[in-house]
Image (tube, rainbow, N blue to C red; front, side):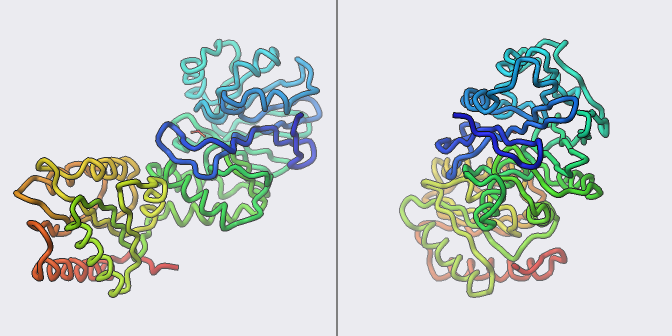
Length: 399
Ligand code: FEO
């Protein structure tokens, strides 16, 4: 059976819903699956396909294009070279041999390397260049780093639709063509932003400014449902990618014999008592997507770790490396934990987060189980965080 749903007149969603996928890049958890959206645009003279689908679901895309003859697709617009959107290109080019791949010059290089597509199949487009399909005009907006350096957006002028590929998308398998449940999509889109987009916060701000002048009625990403109220996702991105942080402390921690856990629990309550929002994550079996989401807004992270063979616990090392790679807009970091006979946990952990432009607050690392004076030290750290948050001009109260 083929599933071809009309987004607007002569514009169809022909992609695939992946209800079962649970991991992306062998790293990112997908609790709600995902989709690989592909869009067919029929102009009065030419027909274009925007993005393809993950190679595991090529058969779904091929089925959804049923009824088109070999000469019926003139262009395949490749907004992004990553294989979840480009992986079905070779099969599509086999089925529609006259089709040309339209993309940025950088994307062409990547597609030739990744998928061995011959050079004569490509038309490269400059930033701002247009392509006429007859009564419909595609305008290409180079938008690097959403998610790779070669990414672009495609704007369909007459219908006021912006096709954004990864940008503004969500890993969410749903039968909804457009967003119906904003709370669910907000959560999925924020998780997606945290895992995929957060390292590129500065360029995201530039890309948001670039599209500000476009009249947009629909945003059609290549993951998750389309937005017929574009401000919903644009305002969310403006918030997430802004330089403002919230009055929140994230505490990723692990404890082996209970001492670090006692410190973390006491410290979390001390912060809550002082009016700070706390998000505590036990790293023994973490959902790293949830942790990444918490890092989108927080002003401060306090890492809790015992000492293992003179260093931090390896699961804490993993979380620290991840946070360092994701480059959240944190302002302050501290470390709490317990050791048995010594170690270099603090030096090792701070050496792992050099990407973060943060002030390191004095750690509270103690010997054995926490005693009265250790709890007092945790109270002092909580007081310091309150003062830092208050004194930091860009802190915004939690909405
Ligand atoms: Fe959905 Fe960067 O690929």
